[in-house]
Amino acid sequence: MSEDIHSQKILILDFGSQYTQLIARRVREQKVYCEIHPYNIGLEKIKGFGAKGIILSGGPSSVYDKDAPAVDKGLFALGLPVLGICYGMQLMTHLLGGVVAKAQHREYGRAEIAIDDSTDLFKGLSGREVVWMSHGDRIERFPEGFKPISHTDNSPVAAMKDENRRFYGVQFHPEVVHTPKGKEIVGNFLFEICGCRPTWTMGSFIESQVKEIKERVGGQGVICGLSGGVDSAVTAVLIHKAIGDQLTCIFVDNGLLRAGEAKKVEEVFRKHFRINLIAVGASERFLDKLKGVEDPERKRKLIGNEFIHLFEEEALKLKEIGFLAQGTLYPDVIESVSFKGPSATIKSHHNVGGLLEKMSLKLVEPMRELFKDEVRALGRELGMPDEVIDRQPFPGPGLAIRVLGEVTKERIEILRNADVIILDEIKGAGLYTKMWQSFAVLLPVKTVGVMGDERTYENVIALRAVESLDGMTADWVRFPYDLLARISNRVINEVKGVNRVVYDISSKPPSTIEWE
Ligand code: XMP
Image (cartoon, rainbow, N blue to C red; front, side, top):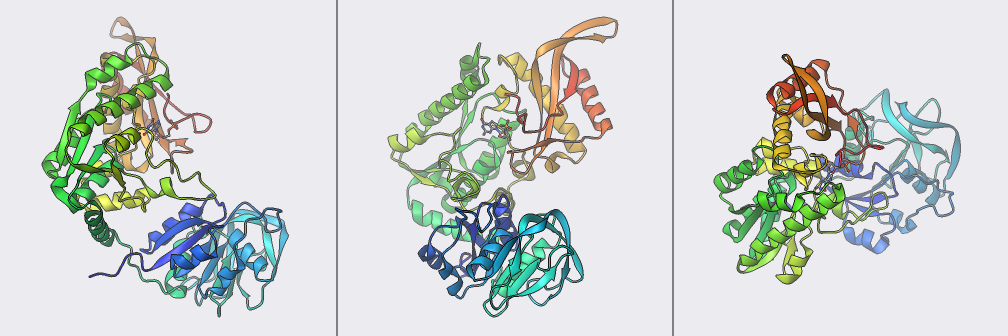
């Protein structure tokens, strides 16, 4: 029996930094499990958590602010190693009797630190290192027992430690990519200072989840809605590994998917994984509902409701179902200061809350602990094909919100044909997995063109491609001109009904990624 994957864990207390999730990523990528909790969860919970070490995140406050977030000082009497990052370091200083002051020169962005002690936190680093600073305050006087281990030209303390109590503080952000040696620094805290062992692997996660799912579900049936997206797909395969035929997947083909996707779902789930799959072909029903509808919000609502309706219809036909499986991820459930949470457990597009009551179902959400990239790693470990795992996000309402204005069968077909070419070219250039999303939009205007000797009056396709970390902000992709040229040529030549291609060069905000 292998070691419990949760036995080696780190507690991250969140003080509102935009980077808190990145700290968690940095810890987990080194195979140590961690959780993020708000700074004010209370000492009892902190004790009960059973961490091998605690990380105090950064945050926008100053320790002298009236309502500055703080922790119970008792945290420093638990005998656990603590790493304070930025605000976390200042707070630790303040609570342990040191003095924090406003710096005369605020340090923001790229900075160089000189390493003065490379025995523990900075083991393996030496000389000068590039780091990412983002705070105005600095340490004026150390708490007792501390000494500096790094400085910059601007401030005598870029990092400090109290070796005896195993308390460490860094003024910069080791969790962001702009601190090239950040991974090593966090790794040193985990392994050198906290004495963690790297037990959090996808293999061990599967093993522990399979056991847990079996115990929880017993002999009952589980249903899972497949959207074609990564999260629901990996959820299904993981649950199938645990309970086999007790799982039934329901896939509603709304006719609004990209070319070949409905077929792919059947191929992967039914043929490859031999999962019980109910595929509901419902293109006509969705198109009927969408007839004459132009308003984006109305489109979304109609599609969402129809989905729930069909899903329920199918689910109610099944016997002895006790659970509904959902691909809920960690960012959806983190209770935190810096991000809105926990968001509703039921994802909005798949709002099957009514079904839970009607069939008195319980939820099974085996990926509640995972970040998106961990889901991908899990899917790979489960033997799922790259095309499913690397798939870019796709909105629930599908192509309906990319056919601007009224959705008809003909217009979806035009969009789909253009979309295939765009993806084909982007994949061919090796760029598909390097961006957040890339797709075609069919505009509700016609423009004049000329083909041979004839004047044409046809549709416009907009190309949208963005880079983003989480979909909350995004920037358009700087494609090479020759790729844009190829896409434009091919779309205009190969897609009947299109005589013009434009490229969307808007960032989010103020625009959004989708056009509707
Ligand atoms: P926007 O257009 O708001 O999109 O910048 C942000 C991200 O969310 C996706 N998106 C949706 N996903 N149901 C979904 O499941 C929806 O109704 C929906 N609307 C937008 C969008 O593709 C992008 O990745």
